[in-house]
Length: 417
Image 1 (spheres, rainbow, N blue to C red):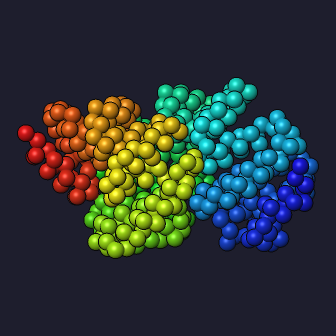
Image 2 (image 1 turned 90 degrees about the vertical axis):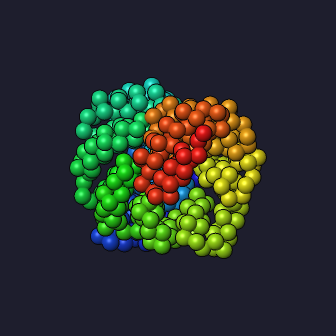
Image 3 (image 1 turned 30 degrees about the horizontal axis):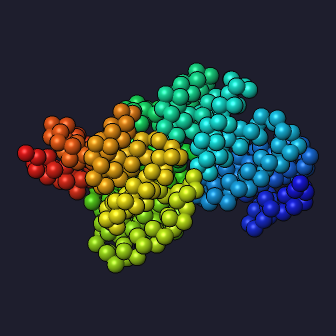
């Protein structure tokens, strides 16, 4: 069993020891302040299980601020300490579910939140987390039901509002999603800067999907004012700049984003931006590094398998490997993004009928992503259904913000017999 001393040495290692000794500061982020305050409680009452859940959640908040998974590890250590002291501690189990989501252990998180719902059916945050887990595993009906329960229990609560917004996005209702995200933003305290920046970033993402890149750009810029160098905002602002044809600005933002959050999927985004900007030698090198890093983690639940699938299709011209990786992810979850990647891999492998089946499953959810509509058109075309292909190409053309995608959709439609 881990001793109290060794546990504290682990969770306050490095810069966090400075936080503990100096206390909360105006210069700290919200999560850093939460960590400092929670560590004081742990020091004062080390044998009380109730003090460890706030510490676990504070570390989880810091993980989201920084994109550094080590903070989830520290948070889970705090959960384990709480459950050693009190195996039935409800708040510690809730914190465990939240951290499992952050670690992309979506199936485990779904099982945990289902169990917590049985134990206590009146907690809106548990239903919100269950929504997250159900979405990520492709259980959309369960997600919708859980989000509704969260809203029924707390109609103005941020957890329920943001999950309902996320579902509306998945179902193609961008206006409804934007309205709910705005409502949630107005309910977040001004001191919770990361949470406010997250909502603004997602608003920007929604505006871009809706075809309003200027509004998207404004939302991302505002998010970066509230929380400078925020990794989510940097990535989404880069996507917006790219859609606006500002390739050099997009590339600069992708460089900054990867420097902030150096994960394989972000290296893939950077490599694509390099290719788009005509920096082919740099792109070749980055793609090679990405492939190596992504393969190393391909059997982990937290992986870059969807990006790796796209890489094998678009860059490496290796459809068999694309399908192998896509099948690997399909065994783990079947959300629309995974179904979409699987459909593309099947198509690249010449398995057109199976590709159409997977694409149809993804589209049935209601997703209205222009690039997805374009690829659905390609798959329909190669299945001999020119009428469906024409409809998909037209949808892609009408919804695309990116001029390059719009042009591809137009050319594909014109090429139909």
